[in-house]
Image (tube, rainbow, N blue to C red; front, side):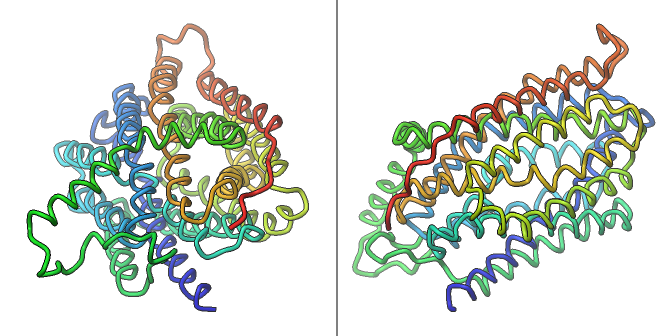
Length: 432
């Protein structure tokens, strides 16, 4: 009962964080276009800057995700969660204050620097927290629920953005981010795995009998251990054939996700003149479908079909979803395509659950951090490939008339992950 009580506070923390992050998504495209290319529906500069931002964030998270996950195994989940919960307030706060071209570039720089450290860290550490408190038999369902909590926050956030002005959207997002950080500090209890496996907390009262030199040497020793994140990543990937296969699936799935995220909104704005409100409507449809699926459908199907089959089903419909976007002949097609999220949202919780069951209880943070690191490689590669392709086919210099060609190529990347998932063989989980 105590563990369930702690998880309820974790769910609320994740909800508030995702609410603040997702609330600005429908508005950021319009803000970017207004700052860089006012009065235009197509802007190659905006697409290239978005791609560069995603690539730089990927470089940072490639190093930081295994590092943060490994450190959370040593210092506790709550200590590591504090960093992203506080830092993510800054970028939205800048645009809440002003959205002129000068302030947009200030936001852009801070967004890159902070996201290099914090992007994806809250979901990653939250999954490790859940794995600490839920036995293996119920872990796939629990991961689906926490993913559903994120989807519910996405729906509430986009609905709020739909009925608020752009300025109010960023102001409310900043307020919710502050509330989330405060709530976590007061209510969330740390997930203590085992006293003998936890190091001294990062923020603690220093023992007066320990000299400052000894304390500094001890701190440097832990820091040097933590900086071996790349070695941890490579050794983790080679530790099991199942983990290697799951990492390949995660890479190509995220390659497609990042490419779609960086291209879709600009494609819809250029092709059908979508604005903030239409983006919000589209995201609400997708979010509601995903929430219902993760909270109601996945807990029923996961024990029956197993994570591997459910993963393949999700990835198949992910491909269909992208191909429909690419050939959209009417502004109604994206709305119909968004409904497929009721089926493709299975993929990420299934990958995380499969990996979680391949490691011991004292390596959950490391496992989730390493998979997030693999996903970060996709954040580097995807913008380098798909952003120039999107800019080219949305411009007047396109070699042939197919505005959705880049999204179709993204769909082929998703198809690779689907084919790989069909070959995934899940071995029995490690016993606690």
